[in-house]
Length: 162
Image 1 (spheres, one colour):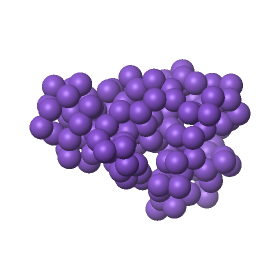
Image 2 (cartoon, rainbow, N blue to C red; image 1 turned 135 degrees about the horizontal axis):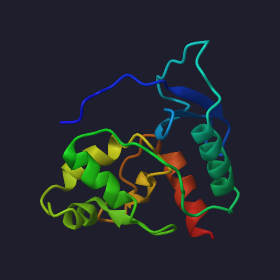
Image 3 (tube, rainbow, N blue to C red; image 1 turned 180 degrees about the horizontal axis):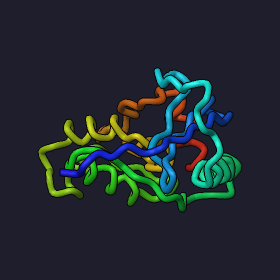
Image 4 (spheres, one colour; image 1 turned 90 degrees about the vertical axis):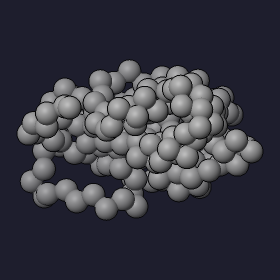
């Protein structure tokens, strides 16, 4: 079990073609990206200047402007062992490609766990950077997406157009 320790969190809201994104980092790593429709609350005196947030902002802007296909950010994903396996598998889906929930289940050695994979994908704290938008249903349908299907369509078409 990983011990939880208190650490300073930094927040930054950035505009993007898919709406406002709220970035959350600690002193050394990205921790979360929230969509405009999420219920994150940020204190008025929250710290917003941090090297990691600067790198994330720069790379996300480059991603949306066709200058970045792979993120090179330090990040810390906090979840169960199963979630961690799923999230690591997402990192192996190439830019511009997709994989099904069943494909991911197979890759992590749990072929009967496509629904559990879907649940873990839905809890991915670093959308876009850990590309959960690249996961689709086995029949080719979009499946779900925390940012909404309109945003998922946009991200997929953005990558596939390049």
